[in-house]
Image 1 (cartoon, rainbow, N blue to C red):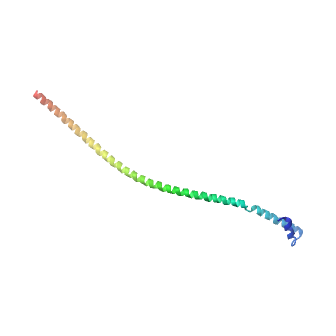
Image 2: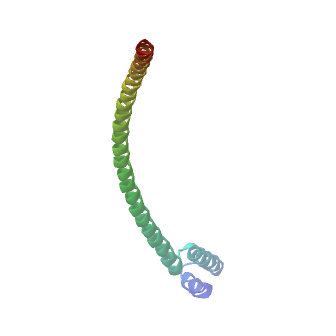
Length: 135
C-alpha cells in the first residue's frame, strides 16, 4: 500500500489537499507501527532464549536438589560424628580416671618398695650380725 492508493480512496470523501495529508499521515503511522512490531525472527529468538532459560532453571533446580540431599547426608554424618565425639569424651574420662587409679597404685607400689628395701636392709644388718656372731 502506498500514499497514492490511500489518497485516491480518501479523495472520494475529502478534497485533494486533505486526502494527501491524511494519506501521508496514515502511511507514516502504519510504517511507524510496523517498525515497532516484533518481527517473527525476534519472537523466535525470544522463544529460544526463554527455552534456554527454562532448561537452565531445570538444571539449577536439579543441582539445588542434589545439594539439599548432600546437605542432609552431611547433617547425618555430623550427628554421627557428634555422637562419636561424646563416646570418645566419655572414654577419655574413663581413661583419665583409670590413669589416676594407676598413678595411685604406682605411688602405693613405691611406698611398698621403700618399706621392702628398708626391711631388706634390716635383714642384711641382722644377717651381718649373725654372720659375725657365728664367726
